[in-house]
Image 1: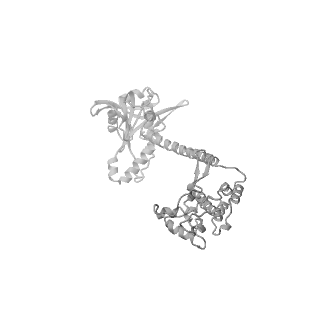
Image 2: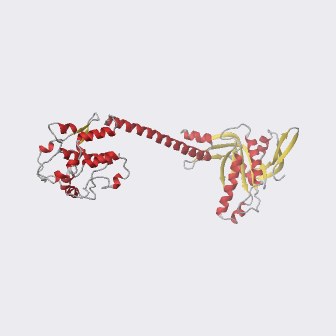
Image 3: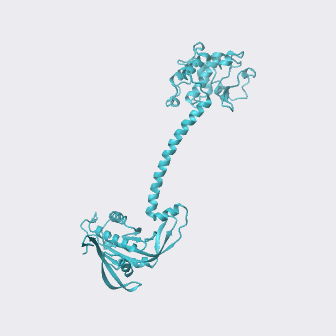
Length: 432
């Protein structure tokens, strides 16, 4: 604009934001100067009133007061137009609110002499500028550019000097600004990505923790890897079943919420105990608690030992367990153990479960249902497997009728002995 004002053209005459264009080399250029002199402005029939008056937003008020049928321009008028463009740059907004007022009403208010003059400054539209970070000095320059008196407006020599002073001698262009903005965006993006990644890792940990509670870890890892989980036969495992003696009568005299709280307290206590052993909790159904050792990771012939130690620990924990809504009632647990082969696999897609199948499951359940309160009842196969390990006190129960199995010789697991120097101390269940 300084070049145009010092050239034979002397004036642009139609400066506005739409005439400031950027070429393919990121160079800002001013266009459309002098074009209004070549075309007639008297015929407005082809344009709507909205178009005609909205194009005059950048026209100085002293030029608007002249005849509408002629083209007028001046250097001070270009300064006014620059002030309007500066407003659009600083406040990232249209110069006037065309929703509240029509373009014709806006031009009419600019044309007449109001006090203060009607301009697109901060007080005109506080919603647009309330959170704006435009420098105060540039806002003052903008206001001085569209002063009512043309003589009070600066020229482009003064404006250029002022902007150079604001830049503190730095020579900036649109490419530098773009690169600077991209660097800030990249730095901010890295920070955002880091935060989102950390949040994603935390959520993944929660998801994995929940998945590991539903399925064995090795099975869950294979599912996450997209592998198919085929049913597998395990030659020898030991299964634990327990239930609560008198649970039906206890439930009938308790509210549903009390029953839920009671079972939650009990199984939370059980879960804490079994975490110390090489076992896998299969499921809980009502008052039934099912645990297995020897799968999905085989542990040789240690499964009977792990289940036996766990059963003794659970029976010991019952002795100190207090039912919140019935503190006077003693909890009585009945436990059954059986050792044998079984099949295991993941069943279902919605809420998949790792389930056990085979006669070993049925036999373990029979050991529990034919047992007695506060005792650990085990089958002959479990007795044989556990006998390979020293340190257990076992008592033969004798032959009993097992549904579907006929007469079976079963045993009581009474406790475990631990060597301590030259002596032996016997740790037994509460019934001893």
